[in-house]
Amino acid sequence: MISCKAITKSYTKGANTVTPLENLSLKVPRGEFLALMGPSGSGKTTLLNLISGIDTPTSGSLEIDGEDIARFSRKQLTSWRARKVGYIFQLYHLIPVLTAFENVELPLLITSLSRAERRKKAEEALDLVGLSGRSDHTPGELSGGQEQRVAIARALVADPALLVADEPTGDLDRESATHILGLLRSLSREHGKTIVMVTHDARAAAAADRALHLEKGKLLTTDPNLTVA
Amino acid sequence: MLPLTYALRNLFRDKSRLAQTVGGSALVVLLVMAATALNSGMAEVLSASGSPRNAILIGAGSEESIQRSEVSAQLGGIAEVGIPGVSTILGTPAVSTEIHYMSFLETAGGGKGQGLFRGVTPKALLVHPEVRIMEGTFPRAGEVMVGKLAWRKLGLPQEALRPGKTVKLDGSEMTVSGVFAAPGTVMESEIWTVLGDLYMLAQRDTVSCVVLRMETSDDFSEVDLFSQQRLDLELAALRETDYYAALSSFYKPLRVMTWITAGLVAAGAVFGGFNTLYAAFASRIRELATLQAIGFGRVAVFFSLVQESVIACLGGTLLASAAAMVLLDGRTIPFSIGAFTVTISPQVAVTGLVTGVLLGIFGSIPPAIRCLRPSLPRALRS
Ligand SMILES: Nc1ncnc2c1ncn2[C@@H]1O[C@H](COP(=O)(O)OP(=O)(O)O)[C@@H](O)[C@H]1O
Ligand SMILES: [Mg+2]
Image (cartoon, rainbow over all chains, first blue to last red; front, side):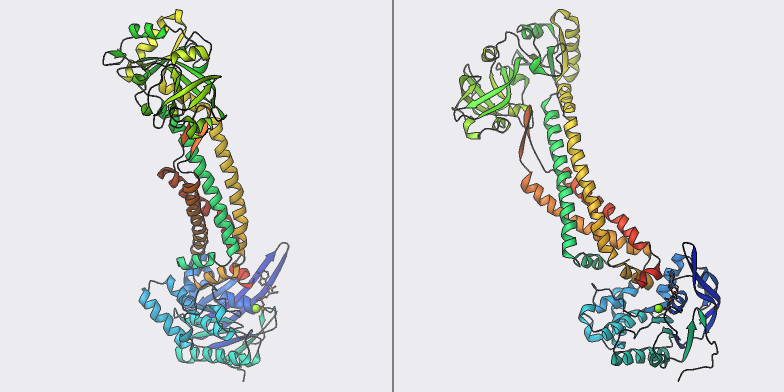
């Protein structure tokens, strides 16, 4: 599903260059739930942004589902994201002026689905995260855990093959975090989603099939057989 | 494309910002509507005041101002027989000998205002067919007939100029004999007296001009020819329409001033709007990036921001239109030689609407571009 070969990402700020990722290679098979761990500033978010087409690598190839997205134009990337990726952020990033239902419906507005089809899909997604009773609530009226569940519903409503999550439980209490991790796990197991999740938390990483450690822009181990208990 | 509800609800996120945008755009739109209505009102009254069939014989060198012109009191008679093509009504040639005289009128109540007096004979009605006596009669010696809007031009109470009231013209008491209408022309703010009275009051033995109503507008050439052949009379021939067009261009600097004022206020408002909208958009840079991460194009997000601003400015336009209807529509505005009525016409309304939409579009483009410029990863971090 994901195949990164020797990707490097560097930013030039005036005279000095920062290289958050250097010569990194990584393969993620379809349907895997992968946890990315590592200290702050190790390049986790940068890697996630590359995998999800939010940013483009400075060099290297980045094949996802058979397409080399490193070569995509900005416009191509935008529509690729709409079809292929769902995002889950640490701080949910819900649109505060829209209701839970409207937030979830948002990605479907880019598709050619009819109003009735959009309604059906959005309701199904909300149902899947257990929030069908809250569709008319705005994000301000929901708890953090509920907001993140709405965000997950929004990420999966357009049925993308890939879900990326950047510290999805980082801002939640333990009970909510457990709920969210359970949801992600079932999305991977029962719905076949490929999930890449960045986390600080070993407990969260334990929910994944495999955990990889990043340090200063490099993977500490690429051994696919190493799993975290 | 982002839903309209998104733009609409974003407006109400910050009520004080919304009030600033709506209020600022309302002010600009109101000013532009006022400038348009005032300028077109003045231009219209001046252009409607001249008839294409009327020619004016005036003293050479005084083409700019009839009040300053002096021609022989006999000119009317000479022109009547010497110029072919003059229109006749029931056998009477339509030739009006007139004195135009700027002076003060005093009312019994002590009010005083400056206006244009026109000394005429009953033949004036043949030359100016738009004049209709609404009340009372045409003036005889010692009487004046006032235009319907004269009170407004003079700045006097309407009551003081009713038929039967006594007024003072340069110290002489006169009686108001009637009120006339001459819709849409400057004559409607004039005071008419009999020619003989004005000789005395203005202390002159010459007249200002002779106005001739021709059979067709082409017959003006006959009047022109006459003025060129009778060098002894030292005349100039003018089309009445050209006379008022020249007057209208005399007011051009005034019109330009109103536009400059409206333009400056608009520029100030647009720059103020930049700041307000920039603050509004910048407070949700991360949200704008999230929308793009989900798969909305940058253009779609940009369009939604512009839409938001246009909606606010349309609110302002609505407010301004209501204010214009209440404050401006139907108001009579005096100016040096007359008065005109302000009308919030469909053209004025459309001008206001276009101003509002343009304000919304151009006020939001720079802040929208600025807030959409940061790269997605950076914006998502903020
Ligand atoms: N847009 C950018 N410009 C410059 N430096 C950046 C940018 N994005 C990330 N970095 C740098 O790259 C490094 C890795 O950042 P990040 O991927 O966010 O780390 P993590 O998510 O593991 O905490 C950091 O040192 C950060 O300062
Ligand atoms: Mg990070």
